[in-house]
Amino acid sequence: MLTKYLWRVRLTFRQALRLIAVIAMKLGDKVYQSDLEKNVALWNQDRGNETHRLQYEGISRDSLVLDVGGYKGQWASDIYAMHRCRIYIIEPVEQFAEIIKKRFTHNLDISVFVTALSDENRIGMISMEQNASSLLKKANECAQIDIVDVVDFFKENNIESVAIMKINIEGAEYQLLERILNSELVEKIQNLQIQFHDFIPNAEEKKKLIQKKLSHTHVCTYEYPFVWENWSLKSTLR
Image (cartoon, rainbow, N blue to C red):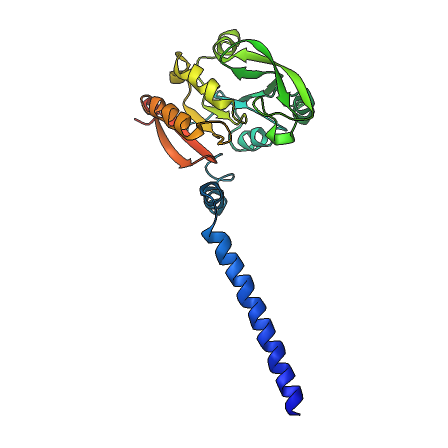
């Protein structure tokens, strides 16, 4: 009888040790989380994809939204469902652009441009990594794409006002934003929704420099560093 009791105590003790080990691992994960992991966790906790990225005031049927880095069109679909605005989706990878075109075949408010936006007109090579496809990464599979100067894109499409310009282009955002900031385009964009990426050299310094320049014309309405942030034109907030 005593042996059976001791055996049960031993099992309970082992179970307690396992539980303690699991708790310690979870606590350790939290302690050793990187800043980016913490920012992602906070973004998810705040339901950023369902709130911050979609909730904008003053957007109407006549408003124009630019989705730069459309991938398969999910954000464009969500923003359209909420605001019923016009959308230009810029997606340089042909196979993703075709998916978007099929998705919105019967939606005349949404147009797809098979190109990338940057600081000059040229041909580039993009790594093929699904939603992480990038002009700045090396990969076994790459594709040739057309790159268009964003200033020329605005002129060619007679764009005078943009309600939201969403930018998620895997590291190429720095060149694109510098071009926007050094031109007259910046004051034509009411909201810049940006995902900065930290895998390029001196990413933090480059991001801060862009933010400093942006602060002359725009106000940061939310920021989850290297996750998502939004900058609203000062004149629209008065």
